[in-house]
Structures are given as C-alpha cells and as structure tokens.
Image 1 (cartoon, rainbow, N blue to C red):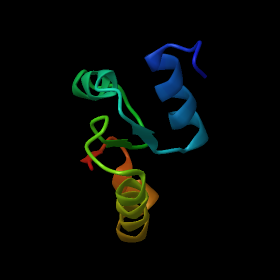
Image 2: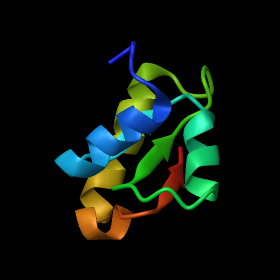
Image 3: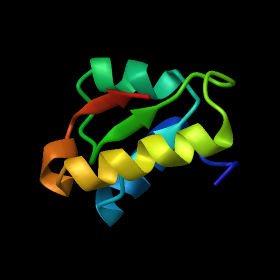
Length: 76
C-alpha cells in the first residue's frame, strides 16, 4: 500500500476492521481531525525494539476488544 495516501490506508483498515499499527504521526493528525477508524497503535520510529513492539502489540490484543479500539489511539 505504499502508493496509497494515508487516508486511503486508514479507510482500508476501517473497512476491513483492522487496527493500524504505524510509525507515521500523520495518522495521529487524521485521528485528531475526527477521521473514523478501527484503532491506531502508534509507536515513534526507533522508540521500541522489534521484540518490545511485538510484546506491546500482544498485550494490546489481549487487553482490548476490537470495539474498544474503535476511534482510539494507543501510544506504544
């Protein structure tokens, strides 16, 4: 989806029922503008090792239901 705009990616995830995991802060801007989504898990690039990122996402999936992530941003 590299050729897609951020809005198109967010729409794809919303329509598919996917939470978006991203390093791109532009998605936080879309969230702040009220764009509906199925959840955004944001991690600043380089702030977590791959292993810690996987652990954080695993905990997120264990603790929150998909409905809990609707229009919610989780900073990892």
